[in-house]
Amino acid sequence: AQTVTQSQPEMSVQEAETVTLSCTYDTSESDYYLFWYKQPPSRQMILVIRQEAYKQQNATENRFSVNFQKAAKSFSLKISDSQLGDAAMYFCAYRVLDSNYQLIWGAGTKLIIKP
Amino acid sequence: GAGVSQSPSNKVTEKGKDVELRCDPISGHTALYWYRQSLGQGLEFLIYFQGNSAPDKSGLPSDRFSAERTGGSVSTLTIQRTQQEDSAVYLCASSFGSENTQYFGPGTRLTVL
Image (cartoon, rainbow over all chains, first blue to last red; front, side, top):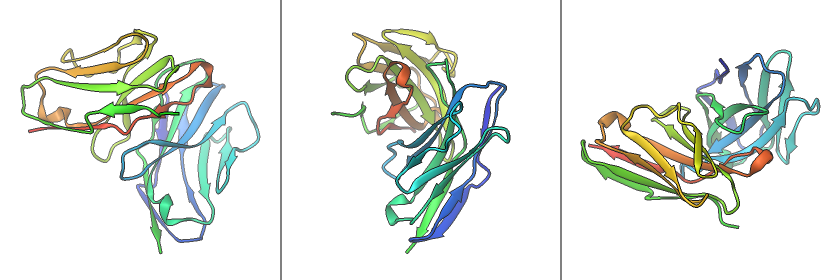
């Protein structure tokens, strides 16, 4: 069975600095998607970034980038120039490529931004 | 365009009562998903709809839980004879075809007293 592990329950970073959130997963599949979602106190789950496993290039969205290590089954999220609005729970999620349902979720990392 | 909407935003009910939670997906999205998020936890998959049919109901925790979707659009999650352990945030998401990215609504916080 596929599993997703986020080993950092909480992280803090000074405003304007860089922080990396860790995520590892376990699967026997070769084709899949990986996602990072952000959940602020408003509860809205917001897509941050997505990575297709067959793509070697790491995905980037403005200040957010990933370090995808397929062999190591690692998918970390780097946030550059952290802003107060980045404070939220961050969830890593996985889905098999040919499956159109259910994301497998990590337990989340609470990110605190220090002004 | 409009995102996924859910109602009510919050629901407080007494143990043993039935509740209905509603989800309006993004227009044109064929797939719809229900998840449950308990306090401090990640998301737990409940059910998935493709159109009006539910190919996978394996995540529903008990026969007190049911869901339907009509017209390929609005979905209702019904919990009968609510228990305190049903207290959680219920999140709905939708996606379009092979794009595969799920877009979430703001959730319904259910509190069973």
